[in-house]
Length: 188
Image (cartoon, rainbow, N blue to C red; front, side, top):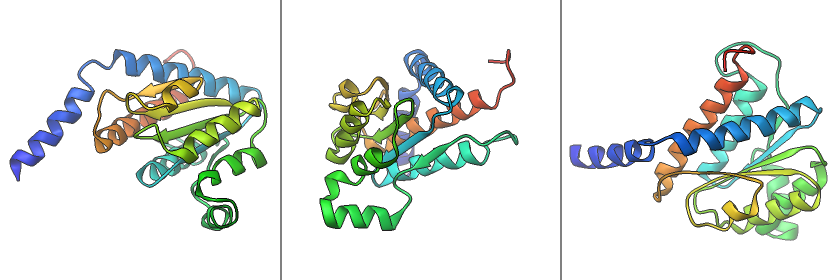
C-alpha cells in the first residue's frame, strides 16, 4: 500500500515541480475575474462529476469566504441545481445541461469557468461555444491535449495526465485564486 501512496504522491509533486506556467496562467485568470467583478459581472462555473465538486468549491469560497470575511463575489456553480440539470438533460439532452444555462443567465461581461480533466466533455465544449457567442469570457481548467484548451480565452493546463492529479492541481489553483482575492491591495 505504501508503494501506491508514494507513486500517487510523487505524481502530484511532479505536477507542481515547476509551477511557473501554472502561476502565470492563474495570474491571468485572476486579472480576468477582477475585470469581470469590477464591471459588475458574474462568474458561472461548470464541470461534471469530480469537476462539479471543484465548481461548487470555487463558488462556495468566493460567495462565502476562503480565509477571511470580505464582500461576497457573484459566482454560480451551474452543476449545483439538480432540478435544472435533470430538466435540461431530460428535455434537451445531457450535452446541453450547461450551454442552456449559459444562454439563460450568461451576459456579455460575465465569465464562464469550465473544469474538465480530459478537456473533451461534449457538454463542457458546448457551454464554451455558447459563452463565446454571448460575449462571455471563457476560462478552462483541464489536462493537456483536449480541445477545451484551444476553445477558451484562458486555459489553466495541469502538468499531469491522470484525472485525479489534474483535479488536485485544479483544486490548488482554486485556492491560489481565492488567496489573490483575499489579499489587501499591494500585498499581491
